[in-house]
Image 1 (cartoon, one colour):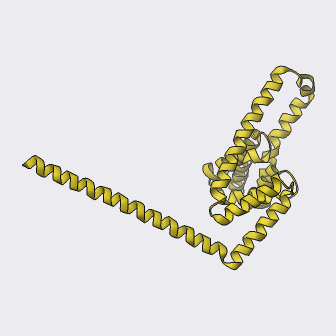
Image 2 (cartoon, rainbow, N blue to C red):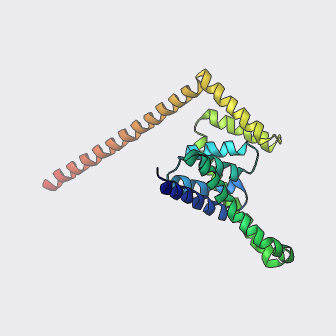
Image 3 (cartoon, one colour):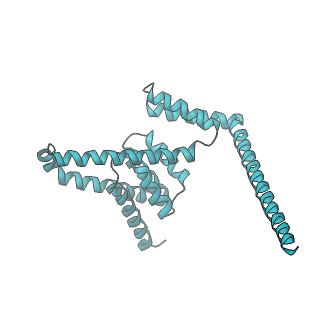
Amino acid sequence: MNPQEKLARLLRLFAAFARIGLFTFGGGYAMLPMLQKEVVEKHGWATEEDVLDFYAVGQCTPGVIAVNTATFIGCRLQGIPGAIAATLGVITPSLVIITAIAAFLRNFASEAIVRHAFGGIRVAVAALVLQAVVKLWKTGVKDILGFLLFAAAFAAVALGNVSPVFVVAGAVAAGLAAGRTGLLQKLQARQAASAKAKQRTSEGAGAQETGSSQSSGAASSEGDGK
């Protein structure tokens, strides 16, 4: 790869994460929908599973989750220069905007229009976080083991006030134990067999409906002939 192509890729990486940083309100959790749209759907730099893995690592490492995730993805795509480009891209919009409004927010924070605007932003952030939760559920909770891990992690965080670091570490240990004992493979095989059985059932029902309609058509044709 020549230097011009490498620079162009770094600039695209910077621009993509700058767009993410510009429209991410409410922290790293609200970043996930835009991250999937830019990295997975638009550019094809990673799969949804890869993004969720980076997101989980970014959650349990020191620092801001949005910055950590951008650094991991950039490093995977373009090495250390990519990590620097992605990190600068995701923090630059916030740095510029906060610097621009910091001097004026204190004077206008008590204004009704400002309070209403922030109220609307909080509602939009709640919707973004909910969308992220739904996507995480669809891609992460696929069997009974995943559901049990989800329930245990949710109870630990919501009821026990346990640090997310310990929750993620416990989930890693549970996943390793399930894989080592063969439980995970058995659950996956059972899920695949169930999916195949459902597919065969639906195909059989479709074939039966097709045969019934053909028989009805033939009977109707004979009646018309008579």
